[in-house]
Image (cartoon, rainbow, N blue to C red; front, side):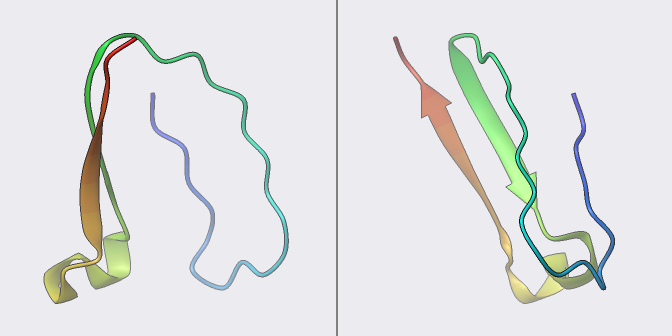
Amino acid sequence: MNKSTTVAFSGKQTWTVTLKKGTYRYQCDPHVSLGMKGSFRVTG
């Protein structure tokens, strides 16, 4: 599932997701080359 906002977005955004076990990656598309990315693992 991909979720996003526009670069100019300012404010509050709430998303509800159900995650299965596994590793998830995320990134800031306009700044990914600057290292604005990461990952997390769901274990339980």
